Length: 277
Image 1 (tube, rainbow, N blue to C red):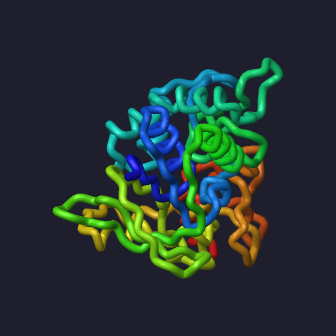
Image 2: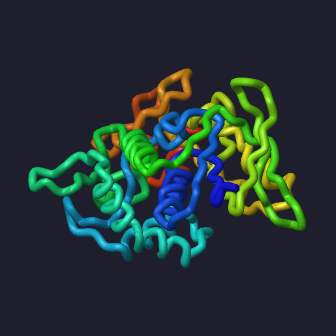
């Protein structure tokens, strides 16, 4: 039997799989697409950590900015943990070989993105998410982690209120397959394709894991929080990186007037654009 079944092969799923494998577990990763096509690959601008490589920064400022962007609704303990561990997470990715862009001194390059009071986002050109995903996938493959692709999650197997695996539809054969495991990690991503045509997220973000969890009796929370990226190419769902605004790009209305702070938090900028339209 599988020790740890990870459903989803984005950044979260791959980190979980690598961690479980390092702990000695037998790990299998299942996803409905190929690992290098996960939603993580669509992130461009960078990943925030208060390294202070370009200008002075602090974990405290990172926490304050994050809480402010959440309108005070976030769990402060969780935000604190996220910000305190961000530096180690970035350094871990660096040790794995992620090709971060570099300063003249050879340090990890950083730039300012929305909602940040300083220059904090660590980046790899404009392909940060893709580079993260490829680096994690390479690491997982070298560790011998088993991947099963093109398996669509149907339901979790629940017995005596315990999840003992899941059933999948093979997109290749059309057959239903059952995989049992001692532990199941759900890393299936969000459901932003509910807003098809109005989201820059992957077409694979269809909430399969969330729906299956609900059917299995899980309690869902904070489902109203769906992130919208403010900027995309006209008449498309192709994202324009936040780094374009970080580099000085303006948002203009039909009268060529600026109407918002381009580097405010994403929800603020997205609402400003919607109001202007």
